[in-house]
Length: 376
Image 1 (cartoon, rainbow, N blue to C red):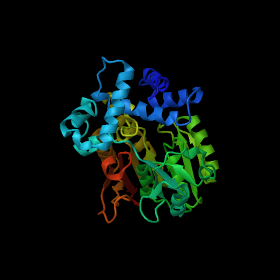
Image 2 (cartoon, rainbow, N blue to C red):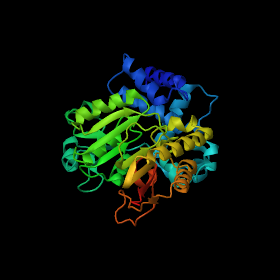
Image 3 (cartoon, one colour):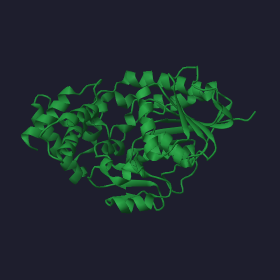
Image 4 (cartoon, rainbow, N blue to C red):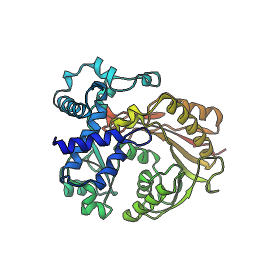
């Protein structure tokens, strides 16, 4: 790595904090950087994320430049011969100590966190095979699937296919959530924590752009980005409203389905976002668990008899998964638990909740549970 680029990476790391995530700092600084070559942005990104991925192996007494180069060496060694890293050191150094109090840490999961994440695309319905051929350096998750893994290094945002709305960049686990929701054309759904709309656009595609989806979020800027993304994808069967997550719902409609993709600690994304490993706290997990319980309780009121309620988080901690599920069921006996099959596993038996682990699915870790409101 050139001294100039090494200095740039060091500056990103110095400016990163709990309130200024490394990925946001990196994007902001790349926009205004001068004198960087075309591939420098990708190289800088790999270096920043390698630093946080291998932080547990680094000596903080060394200057930051030496630490960055050491992290890149470790990343290359792990990529080439992961077996040279013992299970013990992987388990001890990959995540902060408090995590063991919130979930079971296994060697396969910890090793998955040390691997570079895979890049997944979601093709428009029925176009997965065509997209994989046109983009090259791509492969479908399975034959006929809209899930496409991109293996190249080109800027996908600059491709004609992206600007034509032929695909979205969406993690495979997030795509699995949409498939579990399984909305039908003509139904009415509510994406209660829509964010920038990744899952909503998938729901709209599954509904063939028919019916209606309400999108809500507490941040207006996220809904503005959703509007731009929906326009590019030519999906317009949605309406949006601000919602703070309180008992006063954004609309009075009763829905065939409600998706609560709740704000969470993001433990399941630590392979893709290693900086968060060192800024997330156990207190965050506990506070978010209470928020998730309230969101689920409030959103349940909008489910019509016979309708479904889906709860999803990109976390794997007990407090944000099973504890939330059990608390909801204790207070809402009119909802019966769904049994469904994991869409990322062929010929899998029905399960009462879906656990998506990075080492198994190749994407983010996620937990999904669902209920149907009894008709009587």
